[in-house]
Image (cartoon, rainbow, N blue to C red; front, side, top):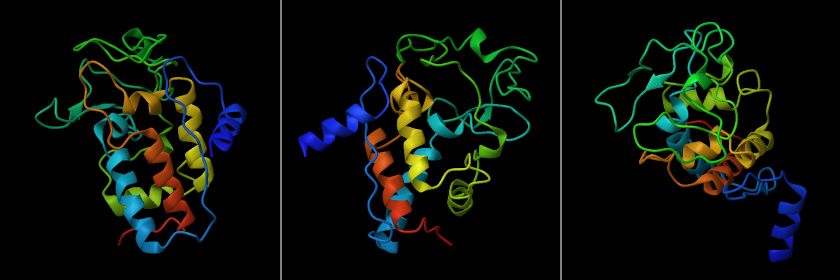
Amino acid sequence: MMRLLALLLMTGPAWAEGVMPSIVAPPAAGSVSTADGLAAWDRVRQVVSHPRCANCHVGPDHLPMWSGPEYPEPRPHGMHVSGGDSRMGVETLPCATCHVTASTLESDPHQAPNAMILWQLPPVEMAWFGLDGPALCRQLRDPQRNGGRDWVALAEHLRDDASHGGFVAWGFAPGGGREPAPFGLQAHIDDVLKWGAAGQPCPE
């Protein structure tokens, strides 16, 4: 097992300093029951609907959100911030004005959080803020709305983004006393793969 883990880490992406490596080890398609797949999906839902993940997965209004335990109710990002068509704010105020690219995911409380890559909103077709569980499930399994990925590629995207200190890694380690997304990155990758091996079932 240790030799397998070492081989997977050697053949995977190079990891940013301070970011815990994770692996993608897909179960055989069909080897996970529908019931277990739905249970895995429910944990996936809890992660992707968490404010650390959902606040930037917004639609064509390009308005990132502020929500979560720090806020009494969800509201658009302060200071009239808009990602614009670029999804990086270049039309008005670039996200990188406050969200700096740094060598660590850590940031002080009340400081704009940073990542180890250039800060930006996800593509508009990946909007999922405010979706309920069934709609979110259908969105994530639809290649036209998830970046053209099947279930294994979804897990690989999580691993690869996290590997260079991107927003996936930040969501599980946001620093500054912020509440992280639940379960942890490796558990989330494993749940995406269990859900996929079950045929990506969605609740009614």
